[in-house]
Length: 258
Ligand SMILES: *[C@@H]1O[C@H](CO)[C@@H](O)[C@H](O)[C@H]1NC(C)=O
Image (cartoon, rainbow, N blue to C red):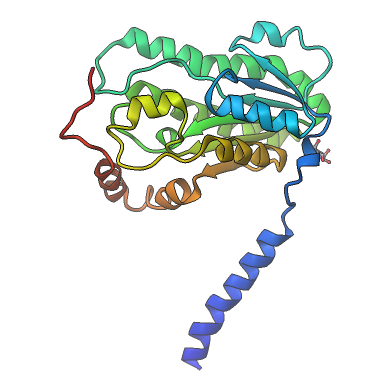
């Protein structure tokens, strides 16, 4: 009996998990057809790839700069706001430059807030979605990206709190926070490839996963799953171990150039 239970209970768990996941809506590219989507930071990297995917799926894509000024001129309605742009930062030890932190907060955080405020009336009307591109560095402390990491943590605080308020107020606007690992964008590779001991994941697939998560109105997207969701399971229970594992992926004998 004891042995049977040992087998039966995990088995039942698996069956339930399978039913739960298969009951969830599946992604279809048609979900984006005719949707009005804004992508920021779409001139390079993941944003550019998202714009290609969206155009292929038949969405009306507006690629925009990082200011809300242009957004105020959008008057044909909006279904999805994908906030993706980041300001230039350095990949090195924190240099004490407070002005840089302020500037980066302006670009990586405050402009996301401003664009959300501008877009919200349209998104409320359409039952739309906000998709926020963040990073593992927005969930765990990483070395050499201190200002960047701070701005990404700020996004989590703002948008996770806002999601709670939407839920209380029955605001039908989904918020999807995307937690990304090291991706093979030109900028990330140039900054980190010599120091990070891991191979970057493909930006094309990454862009598609972000769009899927937004279309399915998921709370968070993890890409690559094994390098984000799984390590994050350690964060609250074995933080020192996770910190140690993170450091193991850095080449610290060869400190990055300042
Ligand atoms: C919320 O919006 C989604 C997508 O626009 C829609 O499918 C859903 O029915 C809406 N839910 C409610 C309760 O209005």
